[in-house]
Image (cartoon, rainbow, N blue to C red):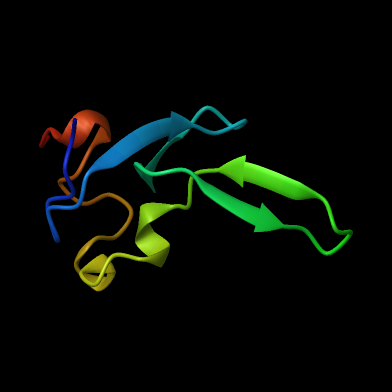
Length: 68
């Protein structure tokens, strides 16, 4: 399983509806929407990574954990 280059957490890559790859936490999480519906999914890794400031769009991190 791929790991974050910043914090070494296990991540997965999910393709968004816009066709972009997004790194997400590997574990699934259940959330409750404002309308009361429960949804199971993955949280974007940038929202929990302690090293998120070291990565920005266009950096050397590409889908699959490889470098450019």
